[in-house]
Each structure stands twice: as structure tokens, then as C-alpha cells.
Length: 331
Image (cartoon, rainbow, N blue to C red; front, side, top):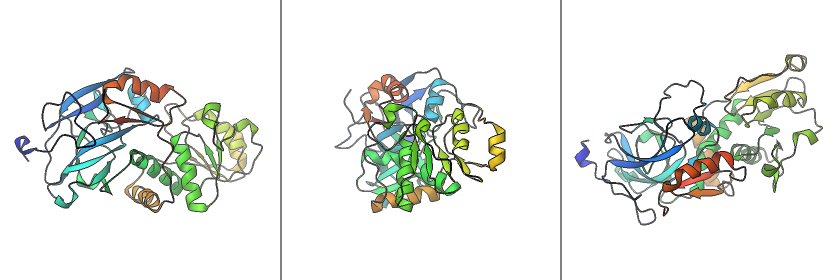
């Protein structure tokens, strides 16, 4: 499809266009250079092809795991990693053009990433006011959606971690992924797992406990979502023989642990990587049914014109569980 026929509208009644956009084939984007800063840039988009959809984004979530490492430049070597890049894998918006799926136009959709920018790399590429993506990448949400639907990627990640080994009886980390993993565990089993959290601010108002106060030594299936490699010794000490530990965080440092305790208990380590299509389907079904609650986890929002401060808040403020970029917000 030629660029001159790329005639999607900019914004809608609830989400007007971001000031500064000059053309239909352009998007306002968050851009990282790997130096601990974020900037707003207006980038040309690759035109949509027959199998693509164009999505006007309403909200983009900021990940405090992988995005923090991309932002700071600490991300270990990773396929496709290059700067400047557009980050993000948690965006929700309205489909405004779908050459191969005309019935999709007007529907809200979750977008887990994109690679549609002329002058920046897409890793993961979803934090922008408009995206061009293959139709197979989006998850349809119907005619309406809420900001909380940006959490679907983390819900799918939680589902993948649970499916990777056993349903967890202990979760390490009480951030958004930890809370979603706990909620999903309860939705599946009817029982709430124990949650460890070392930061007292992250324990307030929740059932999470200080690991040092837990005397249990019979956990069969701990799941670590903290990204803290130093936690493994305490987790192994709390395990029953032949326990299975799932590592579901992303670790910039080399995981390490004392071998003798793991040897004596014959501990198994599983690594849970990126969610798969079946995990997204399962997570979305749990949300639609009401079994999985996404509310109460988005704590901060920011306008696209305040990106620098927004990312600093997301990564450095312990009171911030999940920050969203609202592409329709006033400066």
C-alpha cells in the first residue's frame, strides 16, 4: 500500500492526536538511546501491507523489567538490540485500518510490539501513538477497552510461568508481575500462594511478607519474578526436597546460588521465557470471564510530553507499580 493512501485518522473523540504530528504516516514515539533518558520523537511509519492493521494507540504500559535495562543501556546482548529504539510491549488502541480484515476497523486491540519505524529500531516497539503491525499479532478486545488491558502481556507472562512447571505455592516479588501471578494462581487453583517482598513499601496493603519472617521449609514450586539473583539461596533454603523453582524474571546479572543445599534437596530450576500465543489466549479468557482481575495495578499515568520524568518515576519510585503513557493526555 502506497504511503499516499495511508489515510488513517489521527485520534478519536476520546483520544485526540498528540500535538506535533504532521502526517497520517507518522507517529509520536518514545525513543531510548541507552543512556538513562527517554525522549519523544515523531517518526515516519512503514506503510501497511495487505496483512497489516493500523492501530491508533490510547495507552502504553512501561515495563520495569526489560525496559529499565533498555533505558539504562544495561540490557545484556539480545537479538535485535540496537539504538535508537522504540521500547514497549504493552499497548492498547483502536484499529483504524485493516486491509485484510475490514470488519476489525473500530475494534479495540492489544498490541504486544511493532517494528514499523523508518528511523528507529523496534524492540519491542509498542510505545507510540500509532502502530502498523501484522494482523496476527493483535488481540481483539471488542468495541471498548480499559487502561488495565495494557496488563495483558504481563498476565500472559504469568500464565506462561505457571504452565512452565507447577502452579506456584511461593512467589518472590510483589510488583505487578508478582501480583498477577498470585491472582492467576488463585484463579486457577482457588488457593492464594505465599508472596515474599523485601521492600516494605511494596508489602503495604497486601498479603506479602518479609522473607526473613517466613519459617516454612516445604515449598514445592517457588516462582521468582523479582529479577534478583541474590534471592536464590533463601528460596532454596525454604524448599522441600525435589522442589521445582521457576525463574520468571529477567536477570541482568549471572544467577548464582550455593550448590550444596540445592544438591542435597535435588532442586530443579526452570526458566520461563516470553509468553506464547496460547498464554495470551488463556489470559484474555480469564479476564473476560472475570476470573482474573486486572484492577488496582495501574498507579500512575503520564502524558507523552512528560516522557523523561515518566520513565524515571516508573523505574525509581517504589510507589509506582505500573505507569501508563496516555497518548490522549494533555501536556
